[in-house]
Length: 247
Length: 376
Image 1: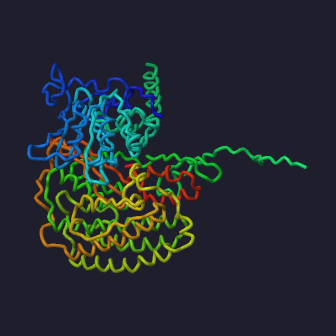
Image 2 (image 1 turned 135 degrees about the vertical axis):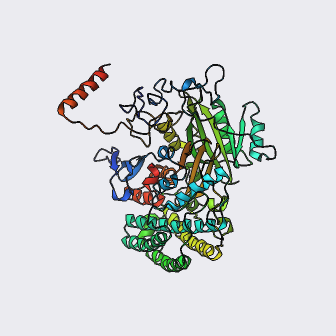
Image 3 (image 1 turned 60 degrees about the vertical axis):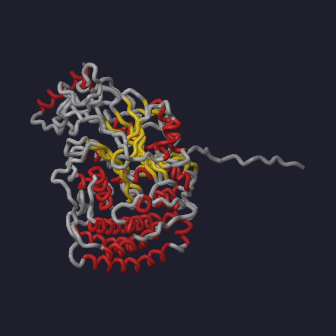
């Protein structure tokens, strides 16, 4: 139960790996860790990724979910999905043969349940639940991706939703029990919470770990080994640590 | 005369007992820890604790070149590294819309099926040894050694092959290699009955595996099982047939299915799968075309911005890669593996509930996990 998320950086020294943020405080829900990157969309334009003045290092663009080109026919399940949710503002993406449905967090469960039960292609098998971190996006930096498969119709579709750091995603474990561990892994690696998950604990990292390693602003290297030359140095170091704890 | 017959009072308290199994335990196939809640000798509940072998493979791959990642995928499921390589390379090829020459696809199929045989042999040996049949372990590893020799001749390595490249293969097959593979196929078909004589009608084996860990087809789908455990529950789902990749669309083979969904069926399905693998290898060797082994691959691999998910059938189940490219970097923006062992292991608490402690060992074996892949 690693819920005590202090906004404290795991490594003591700022590592060299991520060029941008001075403080690698990915530490999950601990406040404003991406402050260095958040103002990427300065002013009125929120999500233009390549804003020249932005401090974000080589800011990656929005994940491309291009709409299907004109000649491509939508499969039946997409058509019935669009017909069933005319008001949900679904966005349909198509890339290298993969269909993606992008849905808002508020309608996620409805769309998930519909996709599982849609008669033309019941997506009964949840292959994968994962996330992608796009810190350059001013708000809703996480993409939560559900890779679904229909064992009867042999079709695949990806369902995707976008959430911010403090937002909780409704858990789909009631719809696909297979999502249980996969959501735990997303929580462990990205710090995204799943509301209604039966057992939201860390799964790969130790329970008392701080930070969420797959976030883009989490450092690649730790502080390294401390090689101490003399006992005096050790005393000095200990004193420095104690002082920093008092603060 | 009347007698008061009372229900017998329990002599002792009947508290639930919590015992810890692993992470260092010979039957957990690595560093798996299971916390069992017991009522007498029956398992009431189990909590699976993993992560002891976590190396941050996904994060690591996001800072490596597209070509360097092939090498890292070797280290996930290290008893089936060729299938890991294959699935990764195919995902990148899909992202870049690359065409792979037919000869390369055939050799890939051969390698993947040899790998399936090797992985199933390790599974058979260790699963049988867990239950007490030591001879099968020795037999299984004896034949696996022949496969490792073939791989060594092909690429120089015996465990972590690094045997695929994006767009094709690093090397053509050595001369005479195909003959050796055919010879091995003959050996394998002779040896398979030896395992079956030891196990299939063995009374101890039947007692230990029949009706142990039964899971129905719909439940197996819901809990996310894939690969042989799913097919043993009667669901005809195999990525090789459903979404053919490499050269599987040109091969004739059958998908063995179970009926009861118990540990014995999972055993039968895997053994039959080994026969089918031999069948595929023979066809592929016979039909292997001439031609180049690498397609037209750009010097610098840099897929256009976009993301995709691509799945293969690994010996353990569906291995999938979800890869996002931002179109600018020489490494993936997001690299995600759908590890079949991880997803199948999720079913363990469901399978062990109500069984004896000794069956937990059989059930860990029947899922066929590799902790290097579970923890990544």
